[in-house]
Length: 392
Image 1 (cartoon, rainbow, N blue to C red):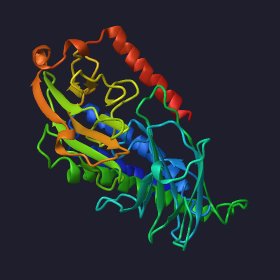
Image 2 (cartoon, rainbow, N blue to C red; image 1 turned 90 degrees about the vertical axis):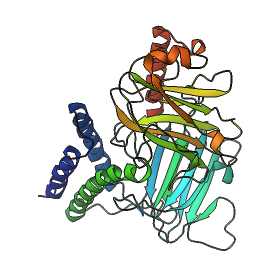
Image 3 (cartoon, helix red, strand yellow; image 1 turned 30 degrees about the vertical axis):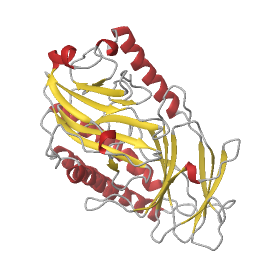
């Protein structure tokens, strides 16, 4: 049976989910099984997208194929490369807060993160007045000219990120890729043997994916003191112009976490966003719940600070970040397209308080109040924006 190897991998993957150390409730298991379904879909997609001679951009993650604490504000695309071939990337710049490119030397594994070989944003490329651009990635050569980026040895994957700060007004651009010497020709049709190989690859990818992103938080999050966040720092394995502050939380339903952080100047960081993640190391439901906020979506206090209120109970505040039943989880702030290094005082402070003390202890409490009708409008705007973005 061609699919037998993949079926065995699914059974192994389900056992990984069921035996994960944080699974304590039926909700934990149900979310894990849902995460498994999205991972199955994603791995089949990625195995069939492995076309280094006739490449195309595939959606790396999305609302139903989550991994790696995916950013709710980002569209992720990837294409596979050979380091000895030349590739042409054409497109049109949208109006998003950031557009970035990154070349990696492989994929994540349970033992290591891949190396970032090249990373830059669109400030380093020439873009025509109409927003169109053409980039070339290939072997090093003398006098390559503008918009040519040498592929270091081992280059295997090109990742493109479009990052939204204002979900309502910003629009995605266009992006395409082809290998310079195969445009106009066609690949041979796949054989049954090649299809069997793809199922086998998808199965290995599935098991590795789940093991990796159960191990990854242990490296970067769970060894930190609970209910704290780090100073801003370059994101491990991430973009050269991205910093992040991370942590993990453990709160009961009568506790509130207030995270206070300066609203970054647009000239310093056009994108600043905060999100929660589940113990599966994926984003919470950001479509139907406010589990994330960008600086443009948040209500900034008169002193220039953003105060996120993380709680299970509804405090009736604009910057409420919904836990959606997750007593434990991950915290992350990202700053992108930076024009300067961030310091400790650019980062967050964290305070835990009883829910009932919010009116007394939260600065500018009254200015943060929202009615149920205003809250429903905020959720409706999220739902509409994500639906529009997914059609882009």
